[in-house]
Length: 193
Length: 193
DNA sequence: TATCGTGATGTCTGTCACTGACAACAGTGA
DNA sequence: TCACTGTTGTCAGTGACAGACATCACGATA
Image (cartoon, rainbow over all chains, first blue to last red; front, top):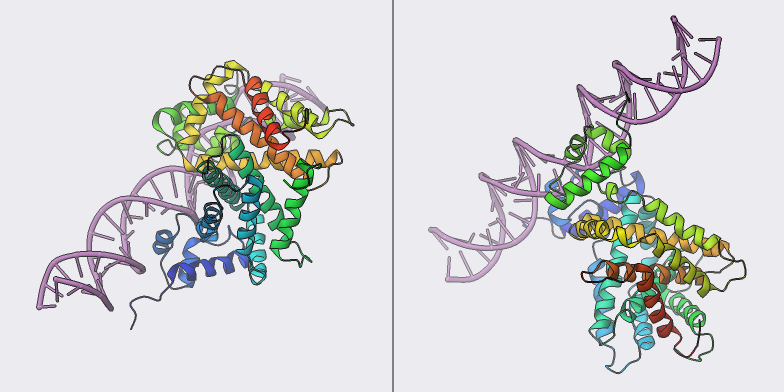
């Protein structure tokens, strides 16, 4: 007989998403989430630094995909190639069978200012981390930050489009379309940037 | 005899900055801030939506400067010219005699994760608002968002540099230097973008 | 001049996010 | 057998914030 039901964190996360999407974020207390999976409020806060964080568990994996993609790029690769590589990798992180769940999650986030704030912050952190990775490849400032921010902007735009009702294209396809538009925008004359 | 001391909001803000920078953000309660200027905790929360917001009061003015700059641009101005104009306007919003106070404020923000989160969010909001303004001038997506994000990135980089110890150049000068680097980065071959 | 409305405030009360301290207790390895 | 570890529960406390209601100087208006 097991001491505790396994995967407490995942169970809490699933319960939280369920409750947030039905009752709303503010109308759901941390104690309710915990009790709904047979745990105490105290345990909830041992797994998540705060109530909002339960919706962002897994983000670290996502950041890691960014970093791995940068570090896996050939030493002599040009910046645009690195960016394209990063965007490809990160888009594959969201296959189509995650789209429905992502839509639910995003709807919850968009309905609450505190959650949108957390999302902004995570995104900003992503840009920071990415810039850092580019710098450690030898890129200077402000080029590294500008490239990193552009990359996260492209991804954000593509991700939002991926979730839009009626949108059926896979994220990889949308991402490369948005990237193409960026390339046209900043260097209309160049054949490849 | 006056009914209340005037400018309650400004007094609260000044007291908060003072207390945060000496004791620290978390070590200062909203009640303490209020009492230090002879007001009640309840009144503090009537003026500021939450404890963090007291450090961001005035941001609306700043956003307005962005918007005015966009709206004041000639109808037929090219995007890079609009961006340059916006950056010029917004840099003038921070003359050198605000540098010392800005440094104190920034030091407080950087020492607290919750405050950094709020700052990320404000910055993201700025990008959103700016993109909206560019769209209403006829720019399409994703060009509007990309241009807006680049603009806020340039400003953020310049602002951080402006606050750096030993930095003496005015913000306007730093901003145009960073913008120049972005232009070189993006279109090294073009003489003017 | 009397009165009335208004807006900024105080007080009181309650909820909930979050934290520290301590105990319990099943498994694990020596 | 026993000490150790990691996850949990319980309990008590703090502080952010919100709703309801009272207060009261001031300005407008009758």
